[in-house]
Length: 253
Ligand code: UGA
Ligand code: MN
Image (cartoon, rainbow, N blue to C red; front, side):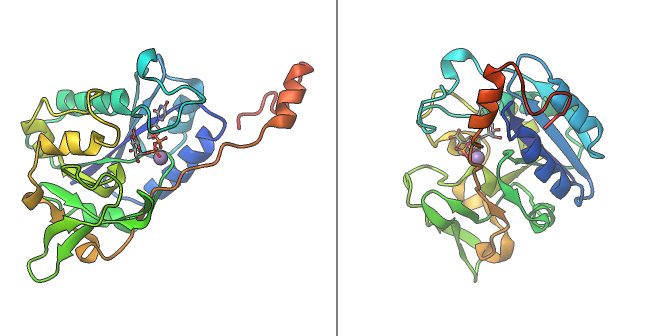
């Protein structure tokens, strides 16, 4: 199968660094197609150039989050969901451009997480929806499905944060067989759900809990980490900007 990784991304000082880290992981994966969706009204020069030079097979889209759903600079990050508009645009692209006979796996790969190459080899086995542990999320070292090693079935979840969610998983903790998304052509993310329910929202439309396929050694291996990048301190840069200068004139950072 081809692995379609959907990455929402937005302009900020660390953007190119994040995308570089991702691209250099993805270059190791055969049969990989990166769908990068900018949270922006049009495609930016930085991301356009970046993708052209990445060496990856990719699709570049741009769709802006409506202002009433955009997180303010001082808002706590749980207040509004991120990536909804962008992931839905990518789902539309898949449905408009791929055929039911195409063999693919769809993964939502945020731009700040850390991915092991091994994760993508696991995904190739997915018939419906594959699930696995995610490190450093939900207030735990690892948030994971609980896998019965006799039946190799998911029998529960260890989540501590909102454990009553229909699918108490992080976005990084599952991937979907393309066929399911083409069959359920209205399945998408929504603004009308409680914080932390995006994953449950898409999954409840396409799969049941007992159909989940535990991967990564019956969910005993961690191949993805929900890392979050600190905002860089740019005090000196701001001082320069006040004086009409900057450190990066003619230099893309
Ligand atoms: C957690 C989950 O891991 C996300 O998959 C989920 O979308 C998010 O919560 C949520 O509740 O909406 P978190 O690390 O808090 O993740 O989210 P971010 O990494 O800040 O954002 C998720 C993705 O959306 C990233 O790829 C980011 O680049 C993108 N994003 C973020 C935008 O496209 N626009 C924004 O304004 C902010
Ligand atoms: Mn994140």
